[in-house]
Length: 111
Ligand code: AMP
Ligand code: ZN
Image 1 (cartoon, rainbow, N blue to C red):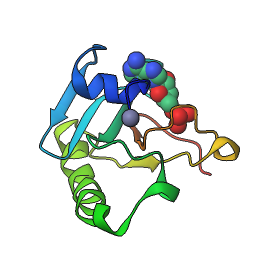
Image 2 (cartoon, protein in one colour):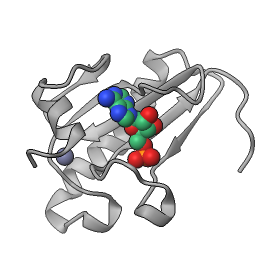
Image 3 (tube, rainbow, N blue to C red):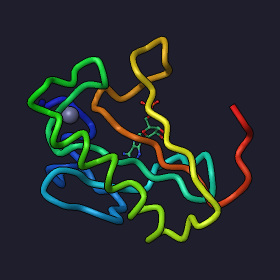
């Protein structure tokens, strides 16, 4: 996806403050943080959002969910944290490459 911002971050053609990377995903700091710690976890594969997940993406999707608690611990989010994914325009999605917001490091309003 040559036009996708987060694919460019995966490729390294747009810089990011990466805190974690493995064969399936990358985690970097959100450029406009909404909490003291605001990370974005993305799959390296271009997947638009949850609606675009295919059965063959099951391993990547589960890997990301299982990795989030490790990242949270590594980032010192011992009090807890929030995981959000905006899905589609009506869900507030602006970048159409699947991403999980990981927020914490301060009190968060309850939803
Ligand atoms: P969403 O509204 O869920 O699609 O969220 C997109 C997020 O990407 C927003 O929180 C932006 O602040 C963030 N963002 C946009 N461009 C960059 C970038 N170059 N590096 C890091 N985060 C970005
Ligand atoms: Zn992409």
